[in-house]
Length: 356
Image (tube, one colour):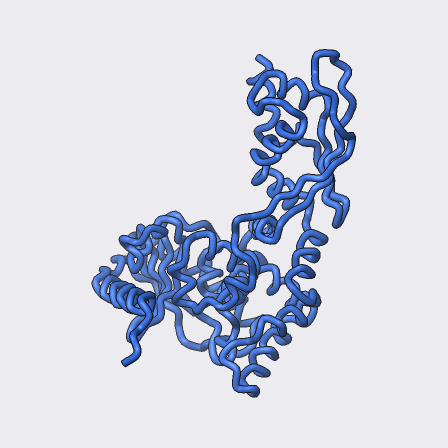
């Protein structure tokens, strides 16, 4: 008799644990029925406020997204996501749509940012052929709802997601150094060079094949890569052909007997061809704000590379003085965005501390 793979057994055990935990979780005491959603929270004012925001979000999603569920969402605002109690990433989870057997509800943590309800309602309202989207792209579409919800200021989150995607796909920067006038400092070996940053996040082919349940239990790097790649593809597909165009891919998958929309179809719909094309598109579209976030994420590695390249000790007063003189300028070749290293958050404070 064939043996069941070990991870299948672990996944089954986790699923049963989640179900048991969800069934045992006590409902928050205050209940408010909004126009479209029902909310439970610790206090009635809290439940009323969330019900108002969730009503607006649900109405907006249904107005722009075809073939959504017509059932009434139930949202519990809880101290933490109880179905994941005991799991390592529980405190990192803002929200969860939990659907299994008799349970079909949305959990939102107390610490969740405004707009998290839009993301989870996106998961809840997608039904029918929408379920043929690969799980990573469903996450991306839920993030798209969050970013574009007119009731939420999602601009910063959109920039951050673009930056995360850029890091996930790799970033190459041109570095231009000015002259050194102080005789006791190292002269730059070259006025213009290149620095490369390769993320440790897994590539798209790796996360694109994960099932929804497997994606939930993957390490944070896997889930982060799934959210980032999914958001970028969703943004580009919707920009080119709208939500109707994305749904058409799901209809096509059903007609051809496919459980999921193939990754190659998504590349074509996004107009990128392949993963390298997606990387180029992300970097081309990167906004100035997102570019600063990218640089902030690689600032430590950037200083290490500059110090090693020019024979200096990272953290030394000499290195701080050298940075102040050469004033490195970083340029992203794909779209010409540029930023001085000395203007990055935290760098000026570091220089002042080292020079003292």
